[in-house]
Each structure stands twice: as structure tokens, then as C-alpha cells.
Amino acid sequence: MFCPECGKETPASAKFCTHCGAKLQATGTAQQPGLIPLNAAEPMTFGQSIKTCLSKYADFKGRAGRPEYWWFFLFCLLLGWAGGIIDHSGTLTGFINLALLLPSLAAATRRLHDTGRSGWWQLLSLTVIGLIPLFYWLACRGNEEGERFEGRGG
Image (tube, rainbow, N blue to C red; front, top):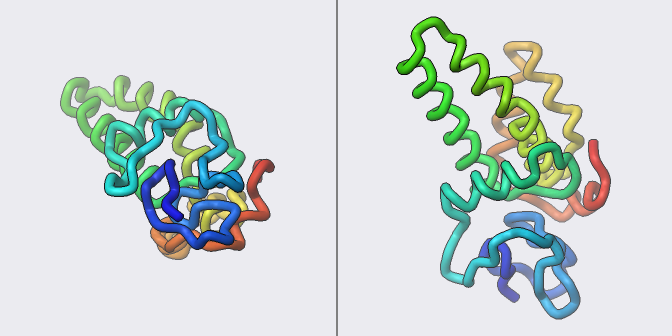
């Protein structure tokens, strides 16, 4: 069966898409309202990722696929970089980073949920060496262990 959310093929017995984490109904449709359904040939685009992450501004529940997280990560980097070019004092970049802090943490939490880990693992970023496993986990494929986080935060 193909996930109507991300368009990737998912095992017929799966309750959740292994790529984007969308909850699948028995009929094979996603239960996450407000998201843009994609056809089977299209992966999540840059714009769709931004729209999804900003619409889930502080939603720490559920799962996020790799395209959703990494496109939004790129968006945050580019916006911060553009703010630094426009305002050399760093004030604008500070406001941009503050505005995007909560959706970035929420997207990373949902991404970690997709890999079967708690969002609290983001605290590893407080240590420089902790960034290595954190980036690795954020880049890993989603798995079925992430189902345990569906419907809860953390």
C-alpha cells in the first residue's frame, strides 16, 4: 500500500507509514488532518515541509519523516543566514532563531519518535560530543518502534 501522506510504499500490515509516520487507517488513508495528501510518485517538498512544521508549531506528538525534518532544518538555516546578511548586529537572526526554536524542537522530537527514541534525547545537544549520535539518529530511517510514541509527547 502507498501512504497518501508521503507517497512511499508501506507494508500492508503497518499501522503507521515507515517513512513519514502518518497513522494509516484500515482503508489506507492518513488520519492526520490538515496535511497535504501527496500522490504516490511525489516525495514531500520543501514548501510542504515548511507548511507542515509550522502548522504543528508546538506539536511534540506523532512522528516526522526524514524529508519533513531535513527540509525544515534547511529552511531554518537559510532564514538565519539571510537574517545575518540583512542585519549584521545579529538582532534579526536572534528573533528568527527565537521564533523557530519551538517548531524546530517539535520537529526534531517527532523525527526522533520516528526512529523509536524519546524527544528528550535532544538534550545531548548540550554537549558537543552528543551532537554526533543525535545527528545520526535524525538521519536514520524510521522504524516500527516509533509506534509507541504515536499520540503522546516526549
